[in-house]
Image (cartoon, rainbow, N blue to C red; front, side, top):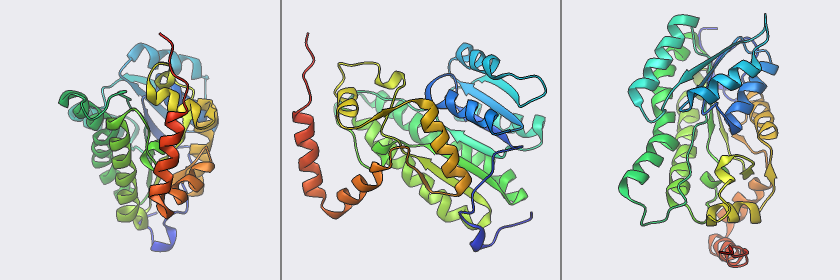
Length: 279
């Protein structure tokens, strides 16, 4: 396949037989995505995580003789040089990189008074990691006329979240970047899916006294990472721009766009109604 016509845009991307990179793969959604890729017959899955021991543990659990090759590597996605070097290494060792699941992300629990370094760390992990991975992987994908990006963006990137300004802002930027990629390269064989769940049972919801945690748990269903990963790959393989494991997010986004003042008033009321944390 040398190229793609506009009619091919959004046609979907089958993951069987592919070489895939998953960042933030040592736990949560990333680990679940790696497992789902193995189940769907990916040829090679590289599990990258800041916690190399956690990534290695997941890789060992997923290893099946004669099946998908599963490889664990240490990676700080905020290190642009290291991220680009990993993409180059994958292409050198495996001949190609077909799918980037740019999943690593961080919450801060902070507001407008968050120190600048915390804002920068959220920016580097939640947005710029997507940018650097795409910049590194796109040339090879475009040469082959196909490739895919699955970006974990969060429903906070379509809506918002109480109690975490850096997270809300950077996840909005992540959705915008995914849309830009789809606009710019969708007609050239590149599939882009933005994964936007509400609550997911991961370490990010482990700190119960944070307003952001109470907001997520109090205003919607909390899903298991496995369910979110399956919804993400279903959307990618169907060519959907948005993966919405919580379908109600679509209605929420419509309500927000239709009457933002009323929508914000309802959110403020929901925040006010949240149970307080006992000391």
